[in-house]
Image 1: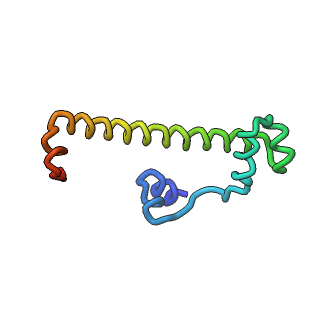
Image 2: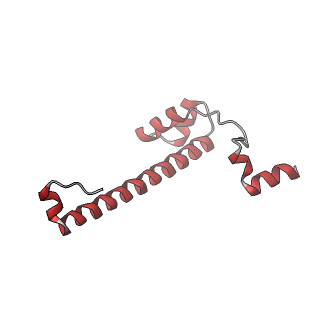
Image 3: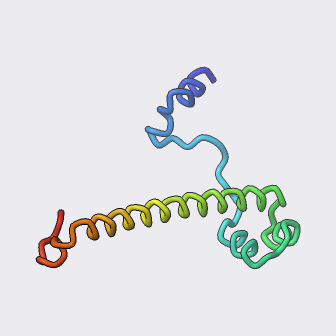
Length: 101
């Protein structure tokens, strides 16, 4: 128990690729499709043969992934905007055919 706590606190367990906790048994793809279709948690739980708590957990995980993707896309858009602004400041680079690296 003390060894496990040490691994968790230092983060060494994740570095070594050790999985901690139970294996997820819910059908994530099915639950996500039904959530996007607009079904209620209870309806999804009866179709997927899982608890409504598992449906809630999957919705939470799905939302977290969507938020991370949204942030990543916003960062890419901001970077592209910076590059476009830089090309406006130096139009001779574009017109001469030189490529900036």
